[in-house]
Length: 417
Ligand code: HEM
Image: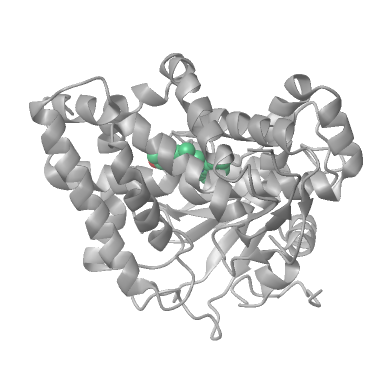
């Protein structure tokens, strides 16, 4: 355990991996004494790519109410100016961030969302659920004859990519390719990967654009077909926007859903009483257990906003241009909202008040899909391999962005073929 003083810098490269997840000790101390905490730039911070500097310091929000207030108000707190992620990009790099759904100007964002959101709405998703269940079963089948596997990549990371492919209409024989390319972009803070990442981004765009052309001549009911035949404010989307949207979706659910499933198994093994309770009635407890895992160990550590004009939040005076770090783990462990917040309790009545999916205009578009994916995968896993054990060292991604497990070896009793 690190010795965490109040002026520990969040960019300390050892902070997150050593602490096995977000530094709650630090967030708690700040929330109590300095809830809108100034984190200066750090000399020792080595950005993940030459284009991603962190020259400017930022304010870390640790209270649920403040993260909520800022997320709800895109007029004062923009994810377009400066982009939605904490690194400082410029020129073409910044323009790329701003072309994605999260980085658009509010007006463009609303128009684009009206076009792309329907397949992610409750009604359409409930008829898609049987396909999600089928994909989850296939993935679990693929390891069922083994007695060991590495859960994060062999199982959990496949589901979001495969279901995204089904939803968009990517043919099954292309999904391994999309999976490999998505993996090159995910875990972006791993070193020596920036070239791979650029290549993967362009290649995913190309696949998205080929698919778009195909759906233009052969329309069907897939989300991609609706995208290319639909209009935003009377105009068809251009190739760049379609390609960018394809890339956004192919990576948005990737780290996030994968890590929630992996943290779920980890937390169950760390809290045997909660696991026993879950197993006593899986259908009853699973939905709230998923919410509690999202609350307790949210896979996204932060997103960014930039202050658009001098303004105030909870008595703190912000200046135009200030950078804000929305800390989802800190908000989710705020005792003002959650009793005994560090306790893992699958019966917690207000677990769903967590901010793991954000809140407001940029609330995660895939939240409903992610919940279905998790329910399908975990039901498969827990009913078929309830005796799983974590069998070896877990490895965390050294990341200031994702609470990501990159290795979790597990053992289980195999099914007889
Ligand atoms: C457990 C799984 C997931 C978590 C925890 C998660 C978390 C988040 C968070 C924190 C945001 C930003 C909210 C904000 O800035 O206010 C976000 C946005 C977004 N997510 Fe997710 N996400 C998950 C799964 C997915 C999936 C499966 C998809 C789609 C395939 C997806 C697509 C998106 C998109 C498109 C946005 C941007 C929405 C907008 O700007 O309007 N996410 N997500």
